[in-house]
Length: 440
Image (cartoon, rainbow, N blue to C red; front, side):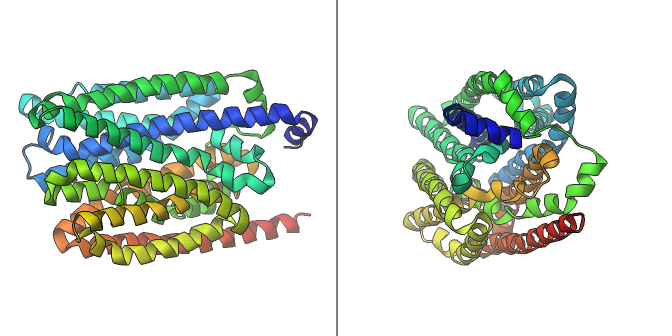
């Protein structure tokens, strides 16, 4: 880190350009990943229940599709372990290329799936396999640039730089919703279900190709390789890392729980609820999601300035309290018709932007430098699996079984878990500081 700091002081203009390059690479990569996710998530509501799970009732079909959606999050840690081995043996460029090749192959393969009437359970098994391929690939697509960006960001603007990787989420949502709106408006329902839904997966594949070359240009360059070495960002998964960082990884997996549960509660879950209860409003609701994405984007940007003034974990704590309050009133909003649905989304996205903007950077600084590269990746995988992976399924299942109030109770439990995880993380950091001081 001293070497990195010295190089920054010696040539500040070069470091400024370098930070800009890192930021562009991070935004491109995350936007392509989130576009992939939202294409699948929207299809899980609008397409798969009728095309893949046509043997089931509409609500059951969506629940089955949400379970397949969750498989991607379950497969992410597996991909992290596998591609970390690729990174150690053949390098970061080979790892990124192979991971994104798997992601693109899995995504485009989904677009060629036959219907359940044509191939039966082979179609269902293929969808599960390709979704797991997407998840494993996303675990391997971690390139460490967000950690590099955080390490080299100016001390008084770290919160603002931490928002850059998160910008990809609302951008991916806006692009995916816009594409589905265009297709549903241009095609009949029969045409959309027969072939129209396949085009977003082709687009996702094309975006992945562009993102691959943009990221490779940075990741494999000599300048960036030097920065990775100076920051000691090296892949390593072994018992020692897990032993040293176990408590931080556990806390890190649950600190964003409220944020990531809310992530699905304002995007995928309400889309399924509208589809089941007011299908004629689907296109209008996708427009609401686009406006919500813009509100979330503004919240993400604002979170950086707030975090630089008050601290990331303080912001996350206050947002968790806000999400808890929102969880109580959200079922009422969603039941008030179109205007209530809009308020549900807009308020939810405002809270989501503020909390999501800092959710990834709040824990990374607590990892030892030698562990940060892999521990950050593993923590992100686990937090998405626990916080978001099964959120649409659980929320819809509870709603269909007990009513809308139960989805609010589920979100409230996520907020309480976040508050508890923040306390655990603070205590682990205090214990680490005491241990470090005892060795001096």
